Length: 324
Ligand code: AMP
Ligand code: MG
Image (cartoon, rainbow, N blue to C red; front, side):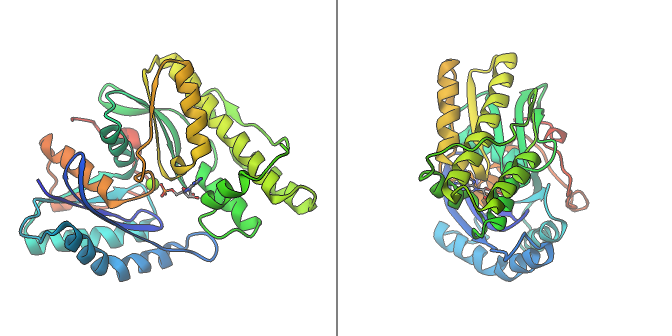
């Protein structure tokens, strides 16, 4: 079965073509780089302008044409309204023109499913960390239930905002990771864990205040931000792991690219005799994960009429019944 997956929830336009859960034929990504924070209208315009070329490139790389495509899937939400609507409109047009079934999928569930497929995991405890989302989840009664989440901003947002204050280009996560490697002195910052919930806004404000004093080096600050925030994430994940007696830990979402976070979670998992996995190369937003989830839903017998394909800006992870 050949599925084209279209992603466009925030800054990345992704077109992925997948043949089976572990066979990705192509994965084209184009990322809008904002001067400041993401501007929804500009991001949506970027997606519209790049849609056709990205699609052609993905089909080319996969060596496929629409004649071979069995299903089109797209990110229905959550995300920025203008971006979601642009990509959904493109998806509907393709579906109608080529007479191929269309399915809208939950972006967060897609991050989880690609991790589960590549890590060959059955029932993992999941730490999902991206720009806007920070959640600790596990399947219960056919839904990915949220056992812990951020009470204010997402971890990626926190890193990107800190980057903006300190003059790092967007997205700041990878740059902070590089600078943190050169840090030597830990500066104490607010540690916001409440049970399995987290809070990053106090940590952000304090780190920005420290920066404005001009005293600590940016390397030390990046190191301290990472050590504090990632310890918080590891503590919340460990608490959920112990309560839920999980045997597997999955890290996914854009911040999952960070080696230091992976190292902390991997060590913690080992101490609990749990296996640890991260979908290398597929943590960031991409179309392949959207195609994969569309395929799983289609194979489980789920179908959508055109009228059910409206975008859902606040589409919660636990709103999806997992039938596969
Ligand atoms: P996503 O929306 O899932 O693609 O995630 C985007 C977020 O991941 C942004 O906030 C980035 O700053 C963050 N990110 C990407 N790479 C890294 C990294 N190596 N370390 C920390 N954060 C990262
Ligand atoms: Mg994402």
